[in-house]
Length: 135
Image 1 (cartoon, one colour):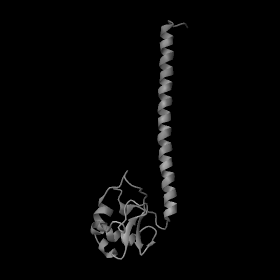
Image 2: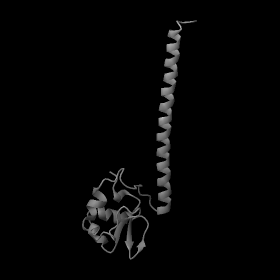
Image 3: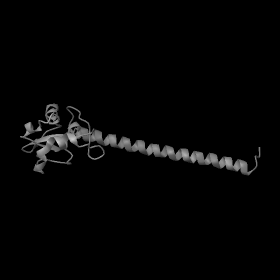
Image 4: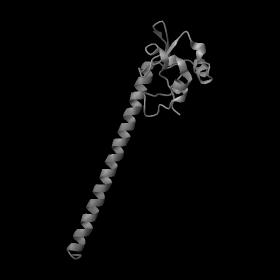
Protein backbone atom coordinates (compact mmCIF):
# COMPACT_ATOMS: atom_id res chain seq x y z
CA UNK A 1 0.00 0.00 0.00
CA UNK A 2 1.24 3.49 -0.84
CA UNK A 3 0.89 5.47 2.37
CA UNK A 4 2.37 8.75 3.56
CA UNK A 5 4.70 6.80 5.85
CA UNK A 6 6.34 5.25 2.78
CA UNK A 7 6.44 8.55 0.87
CA UNK A 8 9.57 10.66 0.52
CA UNK A 9 7.55 13.89 0.91
CA UNK A 10 6.56 13.20 4.55
CA UNK A 11 8.40 15.77 6.66
CA UNK A 12 8.31 17.54 9.99
CA UNK A 13 8.29 21.20 10.88
CA UNK A 14 9.75 22.66 14.05
CA UNK A 15 9.08 26.38 14.54
CA UNK A 16 9.08 27.07 10.81
CA UNK A 17 12.13 24.94 9.99
CA UNK A 18 11.06 22.23 7.60
CA UNK A 19 13.40 19.25 7.42
CA UNK A 20 14.06 16.97 4.54
CA UNK A 21 12.25 13.68 4.42
CA UNK A 22 11.24 12.27 7.82
CA UNK A 23 13.88 9.96 9.30
CA UNK A 24 13.53 6.18 9.44
CA UNK A 25 13.31 6.31 13.23
CA UNK A 26 10.46 8.83 13.16
CA UNK A 27 8.63 6.79 10.50
CA UNK A 28 9.00 3.67 12.65
CA UNK A 29 7.57 5.52 15.68
CA UNK A 30 4.53 6.47 13.63
CA UNK A 31 4.03 2.97 12.19
CA UNK A 32 4.35 1.48 15.70
CA UNK A 33 1.60 3.83 16.90
CA UNK A 34 4.02 5.99 18.85
CA UNK A 35 3.59 9.12 16.73
CA UNK A 36 2.66 11.00 19.89
CA UNK A 37 6.38 10.97 20.73
CA UNK A 38 6.87 13.52 17.95
CA UNK A 39 4.72 16.12 19.74
CA UNK A 40 7.32 18.87 19.38
CA UNK A 41 6.84 18.79 15.64
CA UNK A 42 4.03 19.30 13.20
CA UNK A 43 4.04 16.75 10.43
CA UNK A 44 3.22 17.70 6.88
CA UNK A 45 3.29 16.65 3.27
CA UNK A 46 6.01 18.62 1.51
CA UNK A 47 3.73 18.77 -1.54
CA UNK A 48 1.00 20.51 0.47
CA UNK A 49 -1.60 17.74 0.51
CA UNK A 50 -1.98 18.09 4.30
CA UNK A 51 -0.30 20.01 7.11
CA UNK A 52 -0.85 19.62 10.85
CA UNK A 53 0.30 23.21 11.37
CA UNK A 54 -2.61 24.51 9.31
CA UNK A 55 -5.25 22.02 10.47
CA UNK A 56 -4.35 21.25 14.09
CA UNK A 57 -7.08 18.59 14.39
CA UNK A 58 -4.93 16.40 12.12
CA UNK A 59 -2.62 15.67 15.07
CA UNK A 60 -5.34 13.62 16.77
CA UNK A 61 -4.80 10.48 14.73
CA UNK A 62 -1.45 10.57 12.99
CA UNK A 63 -1.32 6.81 12.53
CA UNK A 64 -4.62 6.60 10.61
CA UNK A 65 -3.73 9.46 8.28
CA UNK A 66 -0.07 8.61 7.72
CA UNK A 67 -0.14 4.79 7.73
CA UNK A 68 -3.78 3.87 7.20
CA UNK A 69 -4.78 5.77 4.06
CA UNK A 70 -3.92 4.37 0.64
CA UNK A 71 -2.55 7.27 -1.39
CA UNK A 72 -2.22 5.40 -4.68
CA UNK A 73 -3.44 7.53 -7.61
CA UNK A 74 -4.50 10.18 -5.11
CA UNK A 75 -1.45 12.18 -4.08
CA UNK A 76 2.07 13.05 -5.03
CA UNK A 77 3.67 9.78 -3.97
CA UNK A 78 7.38 9.05 -4.32
CA UNK A 79 9.06 6.18 -2.41
CA UNK A 80 11.49 7.09 0.36
CA UNK A 81 15.11 7.53 -0.72
CA UNK A 82 17.42 8.17 2.24
CA UNK A 83 19.56 11.27 1.96
CA UNK A 84 17.76 12.63 -1.11
CA UNK A 85 16.59 16.25 -1.10
CA UNK A 86 13.00 17.19 -1.88
CA UNK A 87 14.12 18.96 -5.06
CA UNK A 88 15.80 15.81 -6.42
CA UNK A 89 12.78 13.68 -5.47
CA UNK A 90 10.45 16.11 -7.26
CA UNK A 91 12.62 15.95 -10.38
CA UNK A 92 12.67 12.14 -10.34
CA UNK A 93 8.92 12.06 -9.74
CA UNK A 94 8.42 14.32 -12.79
CA UNK A 95 10.66 12.11 -14.93
CA UNK A 96 8.79 9.01 -13.85
CA UNK A 97 5.45 10.60 -14.74
CA UNK A 98 6.76 11.69 -18.15
CA UNK A 99 8.11 8.19 -18.80
CA UNK A 100 4.72 6.68 -17.92
CA UNK A 101 2.90 9.14 -20.22
CA UNK A 102 5.35 8.46 -23.06
CA UNK A 103 4.91 4.70 -22.71
CA UNK A 104 1.13 5.09 -22.76
CA UNK A 105 1.31 7.31 -25.85
CA UNK A 106 3.64 4.86 -27.60
CA UNK A 107 1.28 2.00 -26.80
CA UNK A 108 -1.65 3.87 -28.37
CA UNK A 109 0.47 4.66 -31.43
CA UNK A 110 1.33 0.98 -31.79
CA UNK A 111 -2.36 0.00 -31.51
CA UNK A 112 -3.21 2.57 -34.17
CA UNK A 113 -0.52 1.23 -36.52
CA UNK A 114 -1.73 -2.34 -36.02
CA UNK A 115 -5.32 -1.33 -36.79
CA UNK A 116 -4.17 0.56 -39.90
CA UNK A 117 -2.08 -2.43 -41.06
CA UNK A 118 -5.04 -4.76 -40.54
CA UNK A 119 -7.24 -2.34 -42.50
CA UNK A 120 -4.78 -2.25 -45.41
CA UNK A 121 -4.52 -6.03 -45.40
CA UNK A 122 -8.32 -6.40 -45.34
CA UNK A 123 -8.62 -3.86 -48.17
CA UNK A 124 -6.05 -5.79 -50.25
CA UNK A 125 -7.97 -9.05 -49.68
CA UNK A 126 -11.26 -7.42 -50.68
CA UNK A 127 -9.74 -5.96 -53.85
CA UNK A 128 -8.19 -9.34 -54.66
CA UNK A 129 -11.54 -11.10 -54.47
CA UNK A 130 -13.46 -8.21 -56.07
CA UNK A 131 -11.24 -8.28 -59.16
CA UNK A 132 -11.64 -12.03 -59.37
CA UNK A 133 -8.11 -13.17 -58.79
CA UNK A 134 -6.30 -11.37 -61.67
CA UNK A 135 -3.10 -13.40 -61.22
